[in-house]
Image (cartoon, rainbow over all chains, first blue to last red; front, side, top):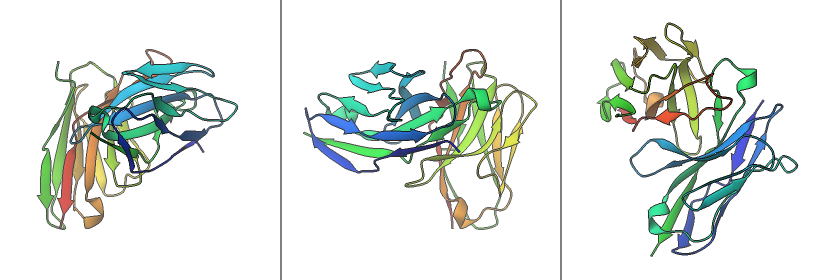
Length: 115
Length: 115
């Protein structure tokens, strides 16, 4: 079945460092791919998404490119801030195979940014 | 526009006690979901309701029941709580079927401890 694998961390970076969180997926169809972010004490919220191969999702300085050939959707940011400290979840969804928004989440990567 | 709301935020139960977690959304979404979040395991779907009047089991339904009271409200009931149900519970909603991919909107979560 469909699955998502991502580096679990925790990841600790200094402010203004470059961030990469790796995510790879397994899917038989043509999934949409997402990154969700969970700030401390809050629920998840969508950070960015891509719906087809070679699409680039971007938001708040974060980017991720849908790479079908490597089945990857790595999250990157050029210069992290303390306010980016959160847990990041890679996820996929393939509506064509289900009657609801079935979303498969990775285990999450905890990021701490220190001043 | 409050989005997705959940009550309570925190709860401590003794083994064998029952309780109901409440969830409501004000976005007129047709689909609603209950997830549990455990360390290192991401989010796992407990039950979902694709539309008003329907409910179905997700990945980990044992020990839980749900009610889709109306389009806005979707409750999760633990009939006889067990320590294995200690977790953070998230309710989410989405507007399945209106576009080819759908964002799920999450509530702030309920942190449940079963002693």
